[in-house]
Length: 398
Image (cartoon, rainbow, N blue to C red; front, side, top):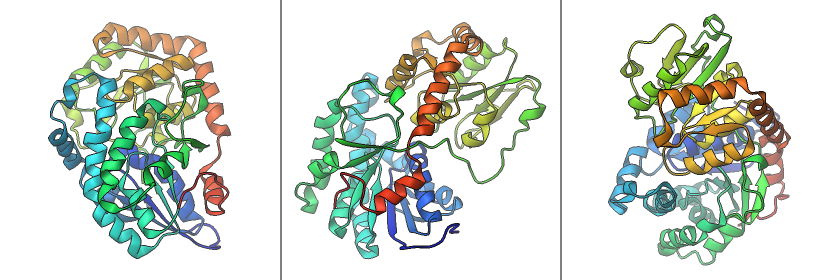
């Protein structure tokens, strides 16, 4: 429902890879556009369509589901899970995101041309959307979903885009995407100082504080026994790790803290066994509702949780699992707002020691509050919608 006066309404298409970590970061901008009276459509995989629709958006369920994307990934690159995380991240650009974009392109192009939006906003690895925008003759802009992509990825990104774009006769589109506007949701304190970036026109945009969900938090935080609450999550992709959850819970057991665990969408919280009264486990928790009650976040290094925790000024312990998790862990540690444990370093004792240090030593909270202040100073989704539609954002490409 529109909450503001409808003035000069535009049609805006938001298109994203079908994963929670790619959908949720774009929804604040989509929500602001919708609430300003614009006609907003979100295009993503059919498995996430209902979740997006619950949040009040018109949805186009297009392309493969998340599960099918994972199958396409292994079909394209059977050895991808055997390589080092840094190599895996680069190879995923082709095997995961390139493959999925190629599959969704035909339907997305057809529906976009028929609808004729005024603007297309798309994720950085949603390579079908620039084709759709070019064929519809409308501007497009890239919306970041994670840390600012480094320039060293340019070769693989260019190669994948050329491959996906090849059947569509869209000359110059690769350069248009890379030299166009990139809505960068990464605060400066979590970027590599002075490093060159993949996209040449970075436009800062305040990141999401986390998914608010569609209903109130179903956890009575106030009646848990301890003053401090720790949020433990392995995200929406790498959560099938009950042994790691148990190790973390064992390490935290000796600390006087409440523990709220997100065990992962669709998982059975009971698989982690019986827990004492100060431990609460849910399969999915809208973190924007939980984080204001927390003192510490323990997580896998996903950008959504990283930025959400930073936006609430919370120190974090990162246990990276794959892909960009390791880069995010390093960035957090360099900022002073947290610690990281590599997979081979994780034991119940190391979790207990690191969590205790983060809760006890004030310098981590001071650094986390610096990140929070940086995020609060970034342009809001509301102001960004206005500048995008008024043509005042440099690098928005038609």
